[in-house]
Length: 163
Image (cartoon, rainbow, N blue to C red; front, side, top):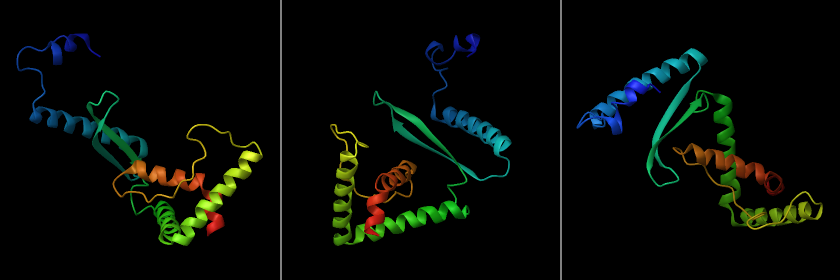
């Protein structure tokens, strides 16, 4: 953001003054992490939070740092959230463990899709209204928790029918 600094940093830096060595990058990340934690703490005070940082590929297939801030729900100490995901896991296990219930889920979905198509609530199209299954979230992938919840929401009626 500062033009004076940008004139002498990164691509504009002379020789080996680009500040890209692993030690310098780790030091910069540590400073940034401390500042981020301080700002979050100012906003949420004593609430629990965690920051997950991992590498991710962007649209051009270059590695980028991806971060996720989760407040409270990352901890088993938040009973309601823990209970919700525990129940979600139980439902997925109950339906998925039995071939009979799994088959019943597919039949219930087909019936539900036919009814909503006939009533005009759903539209047809490529890739739309496919029969799906409930998926178990992976412990370290927060996006999989989101996908599991979305699948349950999409398949709620059919899941209730089977249960």
